[in-house]
Length: 297
Ligand code: HEM
Image (cartoon, rainbow, N blue to C red; front, top):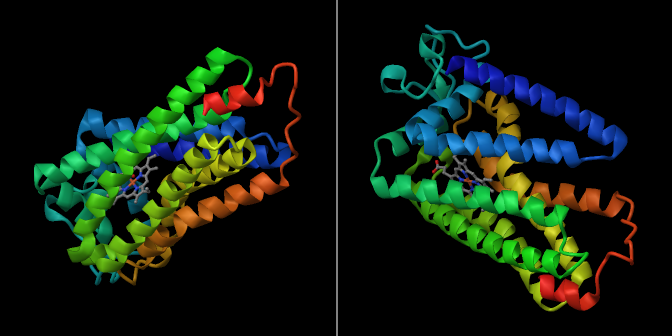
């Protein structure tokens, strides 16, 4: 398992190189699909290895930077803690101090009621499915024939159903955070509510604009929805990777910033890309009619 964390770091380095290349060439497809694939591999782990082990793997990703300069014998920084039998990490004896939200995260799902595990499975499964489908929808927008239009409509419905269930599970889990001081208690709950609002609100707008036949607005809201999803998943985890070690003296500071800021920041970044990218040249010969677009959505 330790070697898996090192493999994951390697994947992050490759991914960062892809981002640098994408920014230079303005071609983002490979970078985006690599992120989708990496998300799928990570999240499938919960269903294959179980929650306790997957959460330990997740915390181990943060352990390395969080422990830089932390002395084994001295007093721990305010935002770090130990866990029973050091079971919340895959690093063995190498790291015995961990970010305190991580210790609480592991304990709540390794030793909590099975209903909580079910909610996490529901959240991860449905939100991951919605994440993948949203990218397929953007890649194949339903133009170019009735079959494409039908597929776009079907995937749209499944994707919206998935994000609805996934977000409901997340909101339910969030209501349990009022007593989890390591996350920031009630502030964490409200932050997760706000994250849900940004993700689900943009998803709803994507559907309502499609149903009213306003394809221009539908595309715009689709970008915002993808931005919110990327914010809630990848930006959240990357921000935490940087902020957690920097703010390790103040319990819950880093995770609260990520909970509140990641989704709106994701939308802002998507908006920036959307408004500065060159407009696509639509091939009228294959683009399909407006009615096909409406039917597709
Ligand atoms: C609607 C926005 C979202 C909210 C409010 C939300 C909320 C949550 C909550 C409350 C947890 C459990 C943390 C805990 O109880 O300690 C969690 C964990 C998790 N969420 Fe989400 N989440 C959102 C979006 C997403 C998306 C889009 C994905 C997948 C693409 C995702 C995948 C996960 C995963 C895999 C975990 C387990 C931790 C990890 O391994 O990263 N979440 N989320």
